[in-house]
Length: 284
Image 1: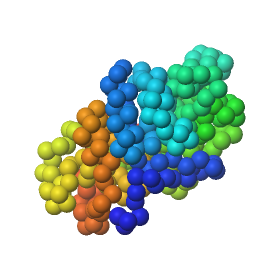
Image 2: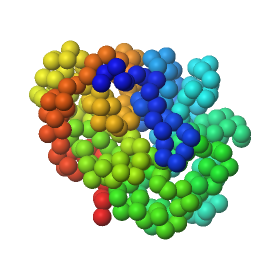
Image 3: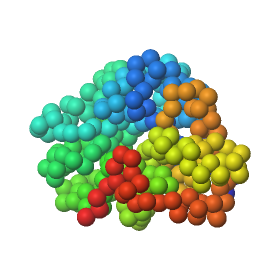
Image 4: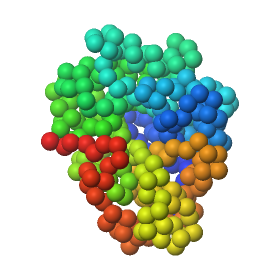
């Protein structure tokens, strides 16, 4: 299996010509000049997928790093997210455009993926957000659209009003201790790409005996085991670091394979919603 994975791998989005890299780079809590330098390190290490959000307050820095890298824009996938609607359809749309302008530095650019960051706006708010994203997609200011922290009930609800369904992506918390199997299986059934945020559990499990034992067995770091696990599960992991050596190490996960028995060991760590450090979605 290991020969089938490479840092250049991409996945097709449902009902779309867009493909996104299977490994992403997260920038949560990476601010100002640190965000720029970390993104540049990631791009040098081979990442071609950067995940930001309005809530992270670093969209401009991500855009600056992409431009400074000198890489062709069409080789890099940039994702951002909106938390809540703006109070009216037009105001919500303007919030989306604001992100695109921050990232691209002009009025004519685009992002590759724009997500609704939270399910907490209520049915009317979620509808307004999605319809604004559909408008952004129609106008070419984003190449794909999706959701984050959506359970089955939230995606099913969209059928009543969505012109674009299913959403191209659902980004949720995923790691061995929080596998969210119901929504993951639902997304798989409908072709929705599942992205894994907090795949490193924010280092909370660095000393977990099972994880440490597997890292020693494969002569890898614990974070490399977690990222490789995500890839083998079919998820798109979004590891975050501001340390240059760790950024590089987290991209070096293609020369080994976790064998099926050890994947089962990691699977057995699942604690359901109790294992979440950020949010486990509600499915009904």
